[in-house]
Image: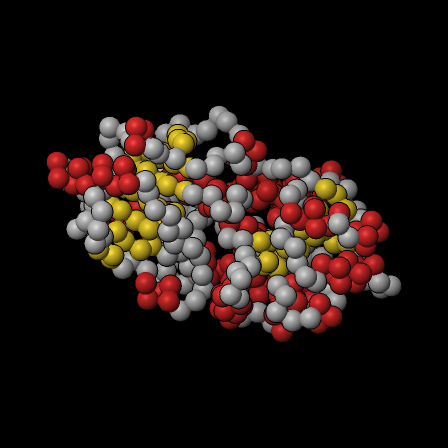
Length: 372
């Protein structure tokens, strides 16, 4: 199976003035939206910032990020008119295009009149599509409402140097290097035998799941053990009779650091949404992305753009197409050690490109300093 190759430790970041940040998150996919916002908030605090995270549903934090939380980070319920704080942050972030409560926009306008407006950022969804480079850092004049006349800035995460890049913690490389020595014990504790291919399964309801489970049981198939995440992945598995014949380990909900370790421990990671895709890329192991499905199939172009950026080999493309319902389940390629090695080389090359870029948190801080 592919060896786990840790990232190199990150260099010391550039120093920035300590600022206060208000980050707003409306939950659509409880794992992805919360996951991205929480990692962003935690890393800002790790770099000397103060963050208030405003959420309409913080329930996932009970297991994703159990307390105690880092000093300087607080979580607040989505605002109503009576709950607007007396002070507004130096930076206001609307994550994934959510619209902040009007009462908070009124407070921003008041701050702009009395002192100066905060740097107001719309932190967008991750995509490899061409428009990301064109729209990154563009201003948007607010034309109506209490904050009319102020400017909000688009900030796009992405995969190229012309975008906002990805969240990467300063200690990610050192954490991976420390885990590498413990990886065999982790696998043993989760029921993975030395001759087995450990596969993490974090997905929605992939159309090709029955076909894939049948492949894993076929004569001569790769000896595999699935590590199945709770929620929709576990429900999808348990709804299929084929799953009863598969070597599985059903996981409990995990805090983010333990989720990362699962990705580092596995030989293949099947992930979904945005946050886990980024974490799987940083893991450097072979991966399959179950992209969030949209009724108008707009996600197909998004997936194609990602695979183009990845320079995905034909077998990796074919698996993605079938897994995401773009081709028939019968087109799913049969996993082999040689295929996984090829996929890992592809992911490792992509990870090296990403690691050479300035990370998203540093770019955010530099952007705020520029616009302040």
